[in-house]
Length: 102
Image (tube, rainbow, N blue to C red; front, side, top):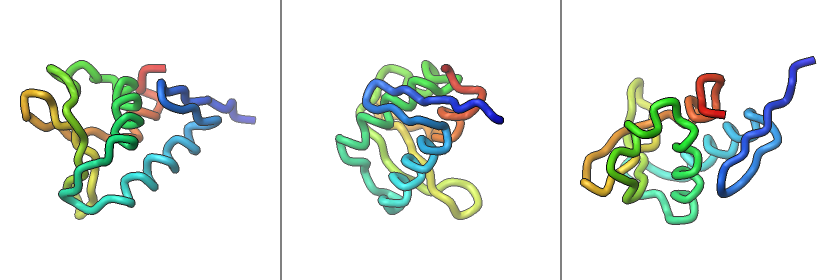
């Protein structure tokens, strides 16, 4: 039987990686391309982004807020808007997946 891997963020905890992916997938679907993510969801995304394998690069000088924007293949993804007004997209599955910082 496969081992369950809990995902612990500063803002919440998920019993499994699947539960975390489902939560952030649903969050992404709540927004349209070009929308700014609300502050409550932004707290979860900031906590999640800390798990990204290249978190320091993605965060840069600091996080101002998050937006949902178009991505490849007619999809959308989360973008971090930094305090210097530059933007960087990131994949929530990468933050949860095997290459993430556990």
